[in-house]
Image (cartoon, rainbow, N blue to C red; front, side, top):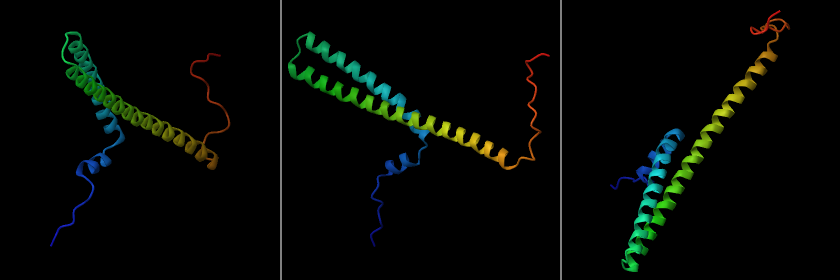
Length: 125
């Protein structure tokens, strides 16, 4: 008998189970690191061109650096997307709690204090 194999790779399942915060915490530094490394390789390609190395050498280094820089920017962009998603969720939850409190206060009018406003602790008579 042949065992059934899950068609999804194990890494995809692992990433799907990660929280948004964890994804952000991993992608942001890795994206910046990859971008920085790409800039370093780009400067090395420019140096190779300046000292007169064959065209193949510095062109390949330049293309490699371009791939690294773009990959780093894409990773950082994804991290930024996750961070914005975290902030939007936090604000939505906060506004929902405030709205729920207001609705609960209006639904149960006998439970809160009389209509008098409380004195401000900073005001003096």
